[in-house]
Length: 220
Image (tube, rainbow, N blue to C red; front, top):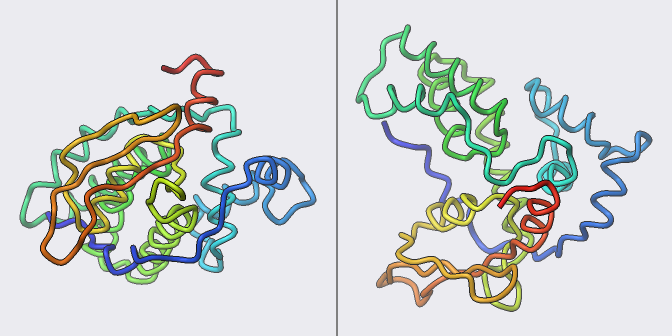
């Protein structure tokens, strides 16, 4: 099964530093447009066609302040999804199962890019075109929300709330990760395989807030 290519959306974007104090304030305020329960309800109910970048940024970075946040969460349903992803063609019943288990997996970890792609694949295979287009648009919007946090340089690293998102970003940019290094407290460096059409040797990621919240909750 071919994963959905999002490389076209992963270009250099406007740099908007993440203000976690502001994110916490607006996502915890019931009167705010970005009140977290409102954002989450819209996100998981397929009524988020009108989501904008700022909505997605607050949804993504606001998740770090939620009680169930775990940066290392892995869904128990991911293995079920893997039963279908390597098949060239799926029957209708298999598409139903893929959609079902990918959906369950996303309820465990709603920002798992791999499961997002597989869920979208199932929607497309079942010809649920409207839901597929909305879903695909918002996967790209989520990717864009993360990438506006920096430019991948040491001076302006991308801010992520999950370790796997470092590799997701690298893959979406069309690179292959070959090494990972913690270069200083809260800053990771992912070295990539060199390409003829790029001078990039690697990218930097800011995981300070992720580590801080992870330690506070007892996750190491």
